[in-house]
Structures are given as C-alpha cells and as structure tokens.
Image (cartoon, rainbow, N blue to C red):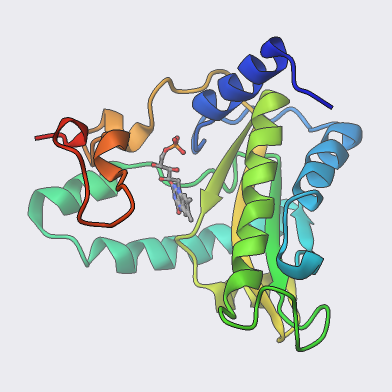
Length: 222
Ligand SMILES: Cc1cc2c(cc1C)N(C[C@H](O)[C@H](O)[C@H](O)COP(=O)(O)O)c1[nH]c(=O)[nH]c(=O)c1N2
C-alpha cells in the first residue's frame, strides 16, 4: 500500500513537531478510545524476533503520582550535585517532568524472558529486547503527537523505585516512565536547545561514508 504525498507530509509533520512535554499539561482526561489507539500504536512497534517484550502500566491515581514525584525529587537532587556552578543553577531551573500535571502516566517495561531463552536477533546482542521496548516508546510518542497529546519521558527516577511503587515483578525491567496529556501548545524547538543547554547538531556532520574516517569536507560543520 503506497503512501501518498499528503500522508508522507503528515508523518514528517508529526516527527518534526514532536516535543518532550514537561509543564504544559491540561488536566482534561484522555478519552479511553484515544488512549487505546496510542497504546495500539506502541504495541505495533518492531521487536526483536517479534517477542513484543513490553507491558504498559497506566497510572491515573493521584496518590501513585505523588509517590512517583517524590522518587523523581530524590533522583533529581542527586543529579544536581553532579553539575558545577552555572550549569548546576541552570539544571535546577529546568522543569524536567510533569508527573503530577499530566492526567496519565505510562510505564513501558521489558519482559526479557517473554518468548523463551533463544530469540531470533538477540543471540549476538542481548540488549535488543530492551531496544524493542524503546521502539514501542517512540511509536507511542509519535502517535500521541498525531492525537495532539503531549508526552514526556521522565528518566530522572531510579528504576527500583519505579518497580516498588508500581508493583512491577522482579523479572520485569522498567524502560520508561511517560507523562501523557493534552497541552495548550507545543514548543517549536527542544526546550534544552532554547535555554542554551546544548545546540542541535548538524545532521550532515554525523554522516560517515563507508568508513567512520570518511566524511566529505562539505559535510562537516567546521
Ligand atoms: C531516553 C530519554 C530519556 C529522557 C528524555 C528523552 C529520552 C529519549 N527526555 C527528553 C529529552 O530531554 C528531549 O527529547 C530532548 O531534549 C529533545 O527535545 P524534544 O524531545 O525534541 O522536545 C527527558 N526530558 C526531561 O525533561 N526529563 C527526563 O528525565 C528525560 N529523560
């Protein structure tokens, strides 16, 4: 089934206008059918050996969110100590999660034992199952944007805390905690770029031809 030009443009529009959303969530609930659509998009991600290692723990309860926020605060304070001077002050001024504001949280996990010990494509590189769950996260992120839902990834939280708070079984690996909700607007550029944390790299400077050493002059940034 070919993709029309209009459909292609819509997909690129979603890709280039997706943002990590932290503070701009509206409290409006997400209709069940919308939540189901984005979860189905996540579930249709590619996965190594088709093992579909993910589960989705959906969080709406405020008490649970409060516990997650406390876990974030702890990890956030530890992280702040790792930056010096001005960088620390800038780090501390950043809003890096929307756990309480977002009406829905979703923890995406990876069950590394889901389809037995030997998995097509995972024998040489055992981490491929974790990457598969990350593919599900990205599908969810893009589907959310297509639904005009903001999504934010909160990784400033210890995974053992996530497991404890959400009663995730021992053998399951948390991959991402995601905030989800409608927003008033999407930032045009990544917020970390806008505040001068890091610049957007030039894509052409990251392309190598045939060998790592081979970057044509006109593809370099400087
Ligand atoms: C694996 C992973 C983990 C995190 C993120 C992303 C990814 C891929 N990002 C979002 C990240 O900061 C953001 O994607 C970049 O700054 C680029 O901005 P846009 O996503 O284009 O808006 C993120 N943002 C944040 O505020 N708190 C966080 O804990 C994290 N964690």
